[in-house]
Length: 280
Ligand code: GLN
Image 1 (cartoon, rainbow, N blue to C red):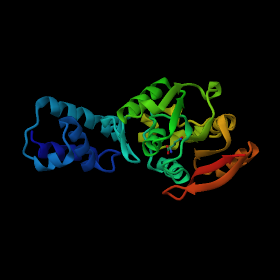
Image 2: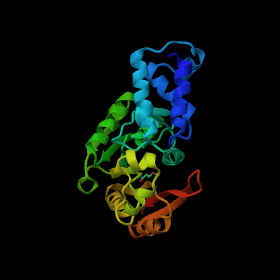
Image 3: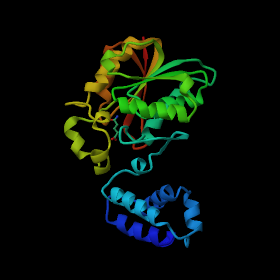
Image 4: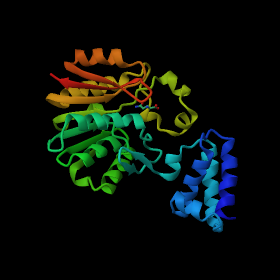
């Protein structure tokens, strides 16, 4: 079978699935299989595929058909300016989360020297994107998942940031190391009973641990705020991603914990998504 026939067949298979982009998905998956970019595929339509490659392609297509996200099938997702290694142990980086990176870079110029902490670092994409842009920053990432920490360390190594990072596998309640100029977090904030309404691709494949915010959706964020008020230096900044309709409650928790609110930023869907505050 040649590339063109394989791609046509694949698009047909995915057309009857949750994939909103069957043609693109087919091209991405076949690129992964033949280890070439998409341009190569288009320019070599009549190239005959090896039997083992057809087999592997079909295996990936079947998984995609069942809703498994592309990022898990190709173990890669672009975030900010780089590609990150991703597997099912970590949440797939979301474009909206790039807001945390953008706001950090706006607050601190290229010469600033800061020690920063990322609570619930997952793949490490937030922390590593910032360190890559600010050469004098030193970053610490913690996560309750040992497997996530392995992914974050792998990404740090891949982007040559291992010498400016420390990662700890730790429950937030037990973490007591250091004092920081800036703390960031994108904690799990989905209300338990809302988990079932998430898209199938998310619900069936992404780690619950990274999404589940307890009974009311606030249980993890409360812990993050409590810990941040202990580990942040005076006048230090705190940048937090929040969920749908959580703004008012979180603002009052922050104020109660002696944080001054600098601003609330909306995401691309015009929902409140990120709060910047200062420890006073
Ligand atoms: N934004 C994620 C979603 O839409 C949730 C991430 C989180 O809980 N921190 O599924």
